[in-house]
Amino acid sequence: MKNLVLHTCCAPCLMGVYDALIGEADQITAIFYNPNIAPEEEYNKRRDACAAYASKQGITFVEVDPDPSDFLDNGQKAEEAQVRDTCQQRCFSCYLRRLDKTAQWAMDNVTKGGTYDSFATTLSISPWQNLEAINRAGAQIAQIHSGLTFVQFDFRSYYRDAQNKARISGIYRQNYCGCLPSKVEAEAHRAARRAARSTNSHKQAPANHK
Ligand code: SF4
Image (cartoon, rainbow, N blue to C red; front, side, top):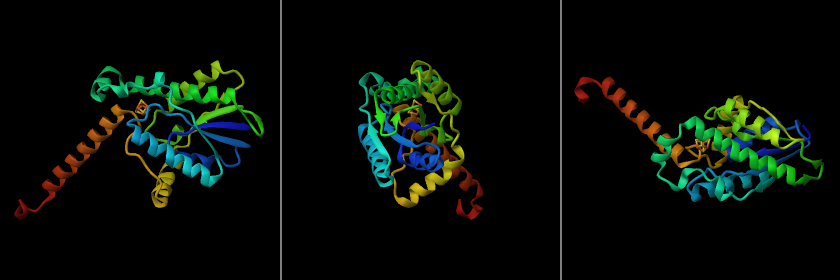
C-alpha cells in the first residue's frame, strides 16, 4: 500500500482512521463521496467538518459531487423505503456505490507519488456498520478496477477514542448513519431507549413519589 485513496464518510471517522494509518501509506487522499446523506444541510455539515479536519492535518481532501443516479430513496418517504428494502440490502448497495466512485476517482487521478494502488473506507471504523458487507463490496469493486487493491481494515477498536476526541475538539458528530431511513431508525431507537429509561425510573421510584 503506497498511495491510498480513502473514502471518507465523516470527520470523526476520518480522525480515527487517519491516526491508525499514519506510517502505513506514503500518500493518503481523502475522498468525500456520500450521495446517501440527506437532507442537504446534513450533507454540508459532514462535508465541511471533514474538509476542516483534513486541512488542519494537511490531508488532501477531495469532494466528488454526488451523482444523482447514485442517490438512494431519499426523495421518497423514508418509512416506505424502509419497508421495501431490508437494511442489509440497502447498506450493501450504498457501500457499492460509494466505493465504486472512490475507486473510479483513484483510476482517473494521480498523486505526487504516482498512481494510486489501493483504496479503503473510513466506514471500517464504525461498529454501527456491517464490516463483512463493506469488505465484500470493496472486493467486488476492486475486481472491476484492475491495479487497485481494496484494503480490508478493521479499525473498530479506534472508534470510541475517535468519537471522544471529536467531542472534545468540538468537531461535528452526526446522530444517524446518513440516509433518511437511517434517520427514522435512529430516532425510533432513541425514543425506545427514552421510554425504557422512563419505565425503569418509575419502577424504581419510592411509593410516596407516585
Ligand atoms: S443506513 Fe447508512 S450505510 Fe445503510 S443505506 Fe443508509 S446511509 Fe447507507
